[in-house]
Image 1: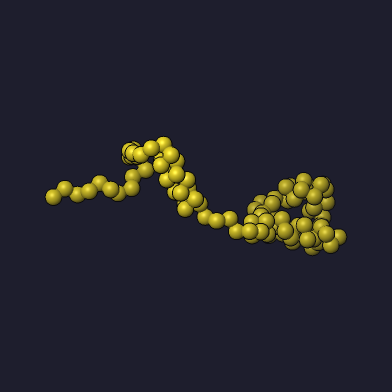
Image 2: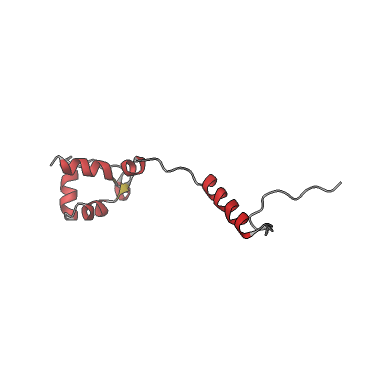
Length: 97
């Protein structure tokens, strides 16, 4: 008995048969099922920004942002060259200045 070759192989071409509308509907269904839902508001709260991006976002100089970070007015995360600011924390800190 011959073994079936139905295993997924991304390098192997596949043949899809059906009408154009059936194929389009099947592809739309596949994309919708394969795409995870976007959490509402969650991305904004965890969006990371470099210190340079943060200075451009609130339109102040890079030196000023670093001064506020050293003074503890803006929370900073990470270490060394991998420092980042969370966008939601930056906005909240800027509102309270």
